[in-house]
Image (cartoon, rainbow over all chains, first blue to last red; front, side, top):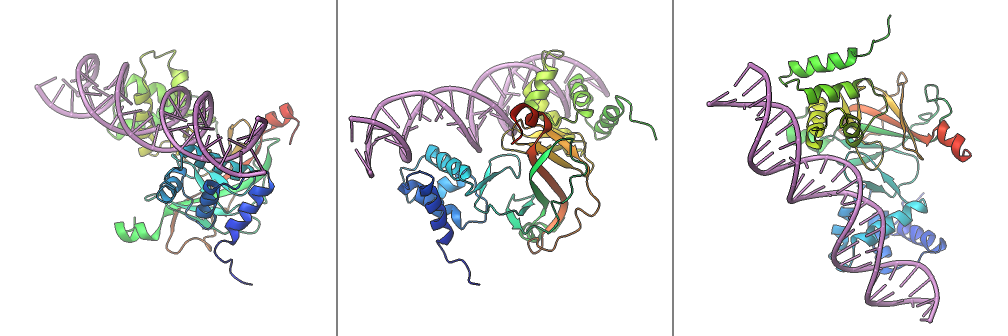
Length: 149
Length: 149
DNA sequence: TTCGATGCAAAGCCTTTGCATCCTG
DNA sequence: CAGGATGCAAAGGCTTTGCATCGAA
């Protein structure tokens, strides 16, 4: 089983974007390539800041439009992991997140088997589509920097 | 074991607010009473809208200041359950949430035993403080209104 | 008087929208 | 030429901040 080489996921996303009738413009290609292999869960602002140097005409509207298109195609997911800006996640497989209380960094957490198996105490008639877990705490970097508690 | 009568939780929160050195002003009392027995997870705007008729001079700054003070005292928790406005939760015991994809309503979900017991795939050195689960799906009301899928 | 709390308004983020312009087919 | 996509700017929600005023100890 080989590792996924750079670009694979971006190419897959671009192909699916194209299949769904959207044009593969330079802006969209740049956004997809920036996001596809990024597990840091960037905000729209962060993506814009990274892309602006190479594409000086990029606009926020295009970033948001593209992220919205990608989300509609189920190629990324918009996540509310903390108050503030929405974060975008190229990993659409079921998984969870560890969020640092101090620096706000986000890491993926592999899902456990059976983690979605209980609906006992859900509201009557609630149909579950997905279960998200957020592990809140302190990342190693912040613990090292700050003394740990 | 008796049910908690109306006002108990509000009184407890007010007492603890006072103990932590904050003055129990009419505005703070009104905000606490509005939130203490409310499980709908209101936004700051919603609280303001409910309080404004009875307290015409209430300002947003006071609502946010008071919510921030309550959160610092661990009497409420600010939650990011979906993109958009932060929701405030008077239930600070460990529990989870069911969030409707359509109407955005939020219901509490009782925690399961052992639901926080595994940290196997967490990032190295990440110290877990709390585990939140969000059940996403469709509430009964929306399924009834819309046809169910 | 002193110090915290309030209310108002302005400013700051984050995001969406309207519209003119630009490509591409 | 027709349609979608872009870029810009304005608007709109959510939240914070600055500051003058108010009120209780």
